[in-house]
Image (tube, rainbow, N blue to C red):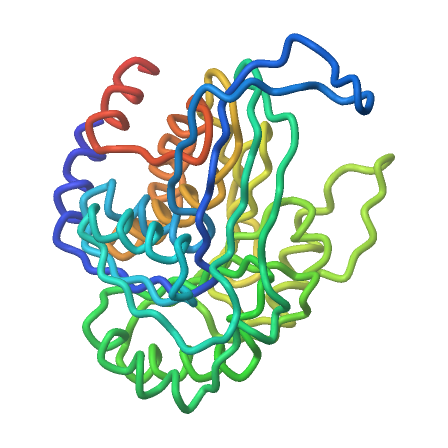
Length: 325
């Protein structure tokens, strides 16, 4: 716990740049006690609506919640959802760098009945609407990359991160000597190399390694890590394994597995964002990979015990670790 407190002090001095698919998470909370006479579906009596930042914007919220300064770059339209999302971020002290685009702000609406998700409604434009050129990215992001201690690429497969843009940001980060990480969505076949960290989940790790999952055989950790490193030359790989914890790999070799820290799981929404944000913060603050993974594991354990897309504060994390010990 003392080591986490020291790490949190170092984290409070960091500035992180997040680039990716930002979105607004909308929650409709209510109850359903009857079936509609119009169709065999429940009628939801709405009690309240809440909004928070989602996607790459939730990564930014987690960074700010843990005490670091954060700038986030992503497409935000001049619409009601965009203004609400910007206000949420600015209220938390997060600087926003809206990127060029023509679509509407991405909104995910989740309907929760008695604290369980009934359905999700998505509002978004075609991926091309969110893309901008690497040339404009260099103009827009050069100073932000230079000022940051680390850069996070948060891909939600909505279109803003392209091969060209990832290559440009990687080049900028390398030239400035900055730590750079990616949370990938391999179904998009995004090209990337020479990153400091990637954080796929179990299913995504199979896709990145081009291995077909076999439910009758154990997870092929060594082969997956070796293949991903051969293709992407990533220094550190952390595979989030859900209830099985985290698999750590350095330069293509498995180093160890960290068991999950979660005591109770109510909602996994945004847990990957928390894992990514806390891992990068710990590593950027000078922690070794294993220590950073324990820190991230604890942060994720707090978040999955909350309902909805959530974040963790230093006080919550320290209290969680103290209770666990």
